[in-house]
Image (cartoon, rainbow over all chains, first blue to last red; front, side):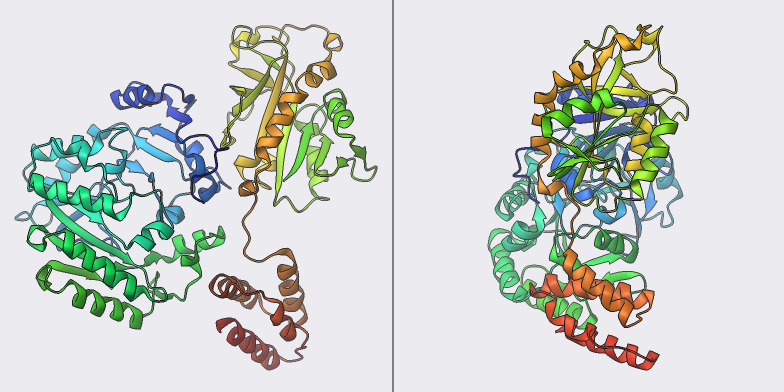
Length: 342
Length: 272
């Protein structure tokens, strides 16, 4: 399902705009960015986004943009599935819904009925909610860690809307706020002029070349991601490496061994803030919804176990992933800086 | 792909019947030849709903069908040209206030417009409606989206008037549609893309085998669902066909124990 079929319209050929969203500067910015787009006015984004019978994977071939006004809640507490990386006050928010990329293991295709991207244009209201939560946070001696790229890849969108930049600028005004920007993007170049800050953790998900090619559709190559990481480190940013999910398939160890050796050869562990490792896991409802859509990807036809409502690989395989990663990451970074979800 | 054209009037349908050599089935009232079918819905939401509901009891498989509502529409006098063909990107039902959105995923050469579906023909003050106005679009979307995803629902409208016509009979409906047959054919050609079809892991023959076997062996609903899941896993993991499973479906189960034993054997087979 790669985007090679020329018969499909380019992404964002259509922009659906909530009536109330027209007055926001971000709406203006988006519409100027896509001057040829067909603009369709709507009263509520859910009329388009939540329609029944949409086909996520077919829509991925020509994603549309929806500009909407977010209603509360503006901020959410971290879930068990989302790694908190050791941060006590861990939250996420949803500046966007959905992602430019199309990783076949991604939960978004089970979470949302549509592959179209929603951009919430009232970011300032989200920021007010963050300030409120900073005051109310449970562990006042620790900063509030906010993942701003949980239901999307914010940095991948940076050339369209500079949202990563906007949130980093915002964080700098609030010393008790830390940000995690999780990404597979190579677009660090779009924010490289920003003065680095310890409040922001740039977290790159890395996978072996075979996984990038077969499972992470439309994403930058491993080499481009590594180049982006190297540049971020050089500029003085805090960088987290995410090996998540580690996919288990016949001979996965050979691919991951080569991959981890390559990462170690390209990135100096002393410059890495920490590492997170995870295996495939997904809430059972999302998994069932994806499975019902008869996905082409083989990931949904593997031998999974249901552990407390989470579909994941069997314990014995999780243990082998942990052992393998511990062994192969040895020497790159100290053990206490590796966080596992296995 | 298969195409099902829905038109309100015989006069709208006639150019397609002639161009594609469609033949009417007197039982289903469906005009058909090769992969193109046409059904005349009648004018207005009530008649369309009644006829489509009856029609839908006769047709069950829409897995690779694109549904096109093609017909004439009134157009905003400053925004549309008489005789021009438009692609609809939103359908507003004036009575219910609901709005429906077909997914427009494929490249096309047409201008797009908003469509309002009304319950009575508009003969004056038509400029209060943006874009296009018809009398069937919303009910067609509402009924047919239960059968196909919104990317296989296409609404094509030729502007016949600017909602100022007193004598409808003065319109050359067939002529208006006939003039656009070339563009409509281009749209059909663009839609001939198997990516638009429903995705299936099990083919029709495999599904029939499982369905027949599940009835014969008296599997429970849960067992049936598990059987389909495991069969899909088997195909995706092994890239093998299911035909060897037929052996199990030739058996019979007279007791629950027998049924469960055969079910266990099938599970074992599918796990290899």
